[in-house]
Image (cartoon, rainbow, N blue to C red):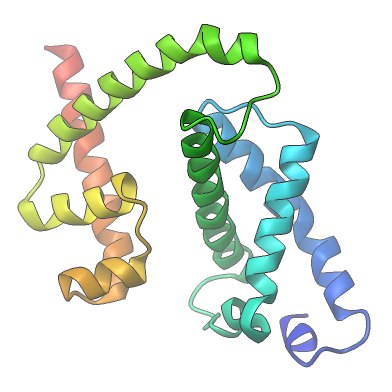
Length: 186
């Protein structure tokens, strides 16, 4: 199917969309839930459009970069999650600056204090957990999770192989979870 899309065969893109739109929708819901963001049908449509725009950009560059080192679904999940997270962060920043309004002004005002308090607590907790990591791992976690940088950007910034970033993040997350569970039991 991927080869058909890249060759721009008739009907290939429609087949691709039909096959993966459910996956992308699931990623949107999962990401929104993980970040405590409510998404409307319009938000979902907008985010799906953003994902498809990224896939189509530069003559299918993202799809052409698929090397088969994982399943296509896994690759597309990672790509779509990055696009969705980036757009959600941009949306939250725009809302915070007053450039975009949420669907309900009352909801935003009532939740704003809770969000600010939670954000401060989360940031403090994340910073404490990052301090417990080896310095090299801490840099990667901070750049990926707090600064929203891509693997490629991190690789360039820190002069490390791009394919080492995913395993490092996984190990760091596991260490942080272990440290967090130890702290709770004390």
